[in-house]
Picture 1 (cartoon, rainbow, N blue to C red):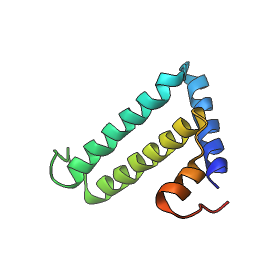
Picture 2: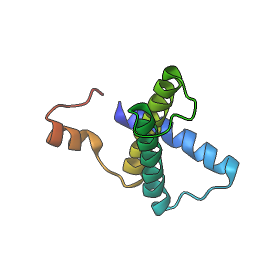
Picture 3: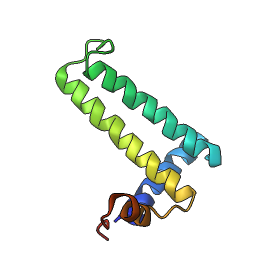
Length: 101
């Protein structure tokens, strides 16, 4: 399951990078992850009243929170694939369950 998901994110990311002339070097993967974590934090602050809502409705906030969470997940998987990390084994070690294949 994780390897298929990683490959889907990789295909989408590589296509986006090619269409926009982006170079995805080793640093890019961790820097994009950090950028997306910042965006997730920003929308979390808005959702919890720690930041200005900028006119966003509850529904818009919920959608933005889900979208930014999806971005973080995607960039974690991209980072893991780029660095040849065995996330399934790490999940089994750290979380004590085996992800479905």
